Image (tube, rainbow, N blue to C red; front, side, top):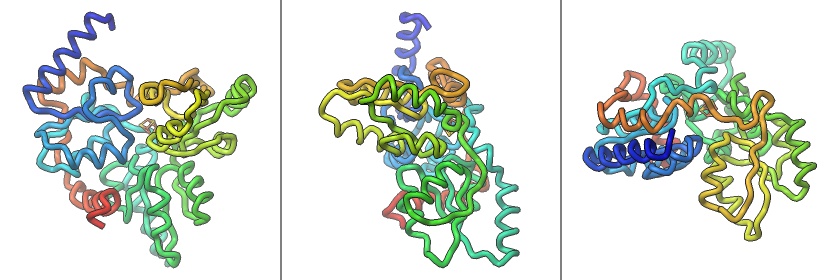
Amino acid sequence: MKNAVVSDVVAGILELKERLGATILAHYYQEGEIQEIADITGDSLKLARAATQVQSPVIVFCGVHFMAETAKMLNPTKKVLLPDLKAGCSLSDSCPADKLARYQEMLRINGRRFQTVTYINSSAAVKALSDWVVTSGNAEEIVRQVPEDQEILFVPDRHLGSYLEEVTGRKMILWNGSCMVHEVFSIRDLLDAKKRLPQAKTLAHPECPANIREHSDFIGGTEAMLRYVGQWAEPTDFLVATEANMLWQLQTKHPRHRYHPVPGITCACNKCPHMARNTLEKIRDCLRYGEPEITWQPEFDAARRVLERSLLPSSR
Ligand code: SF4
């Protein structure tokens, strides 16, 4: 978009936001121009917690569908808008609720005692079938809380699951799902980049496969990455293996460093096509027309109880 057009759209968003008393939440994987107009930016955990503190009657959630659903479940009386209702998630889609329910039943029939620990990147119907919902920020803590006499069924991300097995020493039953963005980082390109920039530190999201994680200096979710780079006083080069829009947030919060995206096998930058469905125009239009809205679904009641005890420590 040309600058004058962008300015008009942004002015329209700010005017509507003010008039409606809306709060805009944006995930770190949104384009920088969207993060720039947001009231709160964050990872899934930070945004889910922030959603419970929001006082305004309308929340515009700039992220993907499962995130907006989560905001609605934690704020039943608020109007939650998602700029593009088709903003989905390959990881969430890899674990349909009916398939999970059949698998859990098969485990029970076989006499297995287990708790289901579910990554937040999942539908409300899957959360409703779970004992715990975790994010990359609190997964380790929750996994360590599951009693040793119970097995853990971890869904849907097999890479995050295998990372948690490594750090907790807890063997788990892993669902075979993955994120299309984190799965395709190229190990060959990462090793080439490390040769070109031997002094650089590599940051990897735990949704990355093991071959990327094992060549990284730091493994953590996006919020943890921000804390990690903030500790380096001297200007430093960082190779970043997560969705490429995270570089905008890193650059904005810690501009003294230089950030380089780790390329994927199929593209140079690794942007999430689902996150990219949200645009400034769609944000303006959802404020203008009051839709698309996330409406309450029958499975939200059960999913909400799991979310609250997992993500809001005061309700545990
Ligand atoms: S980056 Fe991966 S996990 Fe996140 S929304 Fe996109 S497909 Fe889903």
